[in-house]
Image (cartoon, rainbow over the protein chains, first blue to last red):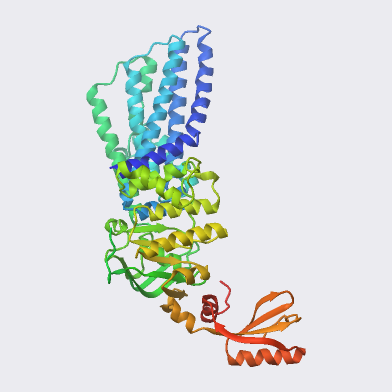
Length: 255
Length: 311
């Protein structure tokens, strides 16, 4: 385990020493605090607007940082040949892959927590009430990051870094909206097409389930604990599927 | 781990490696290669660019799969974790992690090398001292020159006193001081009876370090023998001529050995080349002031074996 954590530690240090999380956090801060200025005018409903903008911006930025960090791990190691001395030690490719995954996952978790602290501070300054749903939303966003990290890290052994960032971003965003699209489309089709869309609906991961920020925005009640538990298992399952595919490829690939 | 004698450390049997380029062209990097390295040997693996040296090393390290044949290290398949416990490896050019310091880099490798936590600091201090990076250990690796990066590489390779060192172009691009230091470290390693298998274009280094040399070209072993035997098979005749400007094209088998203060030394590979050289000098109206026979170098052997093809 120490080997996996040693590799993870390098991925975490890399991300923070490159300073990209800080740049994005400052940028996101400017956007959401900019939105916060509107609430000073006392217009009804602007509290909701600030919450919505805050959650949306931090959500997108978290995904972006997670995708960029995950996409560069293995391709950069291969390009710079840092993987060679690493794999020459008594370390298996599985340990390297897991170490990279844990490193990116921890870094993305930290980024989500930083963003959440930033949001909480904004809401507190602007006297916008926050409920327990805020914490639930943060928790599920962290799970989402681990799924996206698994997806992007796995795609990184199939695609170039640039292509991976683009495709992973598109997939991460599309998978948050595809469920509604399929529900709309399936009312218009029948027969095999209908079955195909049903299959698609059940096979593809429903990342939209991991965004419950609208509950906080609109003041809806919190999600029951069992839902969070089921979503955690569901998320871990998909992360495991993505990781298995990537690991299988990484295990066999010529470096 | 101690070294055991009469143990075959590296075995390569009928190894072939093929791959396809981005344009779909099939390239055969290694063709039916056979070689063995015994425990305690220092073996130089030499050949022109594209000969298949790095590909062979990649197969040995488990980075590349073989298309045919097999390779083993300590009887285990390449990539086997047990075998890696006994190996130190230095790739041709590795940049390491630019955002880590030299100490952090070595600390990470120490974890992977299974050096106990309580010993790590001492091990790293000793290695930094050995490779001449003491005092520079807290600087990020990104600011390091190629020579300093190679020192970090050597430190991670020899960490934990491995039984076998595999080095790919270890002194390539290093300045004379760095090259001297690397040689000193390898000789120290050799003096402990450890096994070293290394590829290099620096033939003087190979001559100084190796017990045995394997010459590879076109993915196949061209020749292999003990270094002293190879060198004794190469003789050259040196001719000293004063105040001569060498013609643009020299006779076959004749080379300019050196030019100093108006004195030119020609070498001839064999008797026939001697005849051609003296003929040329007669035509030019020049006389040989002195001549003698001496042992050739590994470079002479290499050029005669591989030829002058552009790679």
